[in-house]
Image (cartoon, rainbow, N blue to C red; front, side, top):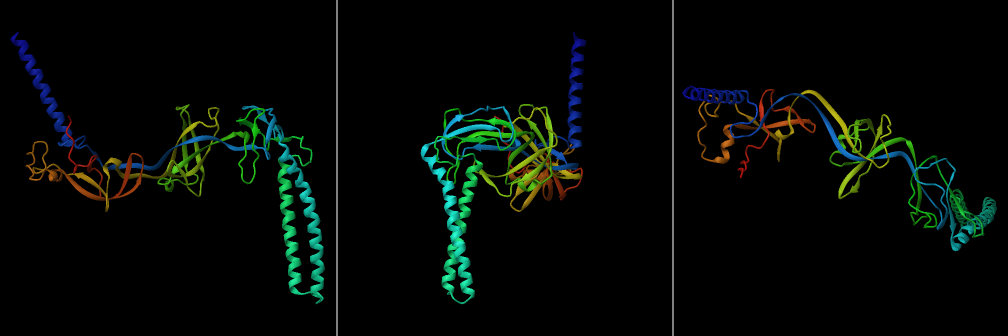
Length: 395
């Protein structure tokens, strides 16, 4: 029994010595925490690249909302979501209400009347010009004739434009109110949305009315990603910048792309100003579907082999950025085999025995590292927490 006790004592002693040596080595190398448990990191060369992270949405490159030019009831709706349609194919038919159909039928009559009035005003104006040149007409009379001519010309152009819009939308230009308006696909593609049903009433699109969307047609051969970038980050984004895209639905799949468009003006989204950015993908994939959530990483400016520190090491002050550099071990600052620091009269100044506040000039910043342009040298150690603030005692 006595021999067993001796071995236990020896093992415990070896363990204590090993732990002491390990702790001393750690302090000597300057890694990990200081004696007052402030974590530190070394200043070292690293590659630093600006990166902007945002969440966007997968969208088709081209899509169009198809609406009716007049209000009425849907009497035909031959397409469903997922159907492939060709340009000019019938996608809906609307039976206009009687009053609107009769009003639309008057469009052609308005054009005819405008043409007659313009012809008369033009003839009168040309006659007045000849009389003016012959000295047989006053300038005021000629000016009145010119005004009537210009007014008639503008009225004719407006009537023709209105007629063209109505005709291109399939609205029947006839007094027969029983005719229906055929609505055709303006482009080939896939019906990705059909929010209405047969028999529903729809509102026509006009100057003061957005109109009811009957179907949305999209070209799914080219998908892109749209995202709103916060105004504080938009300065880091450049046209053509490389982008990595991942999908919530397929987290292991990555798509490469480039910034294809940056909106010239901001918009307000949840009380935050953002700029719309479009990401063109280098390749398409079957995983891409309209409306999917996309996580994007936009790569910005890059600096290689520059001095850098973790972002946690840089503290913003009113007059610039500062870091807290760990002082070398001395009899005053403490260290392995050296006396502990003397008590400081003011506990708030105790950090000065181990750290030096130093102003630095910073450059590029990634999500993890900050480039240090001036103020530090390689191998120095900086605090990852503000040593000037007292640590909270663990309960």
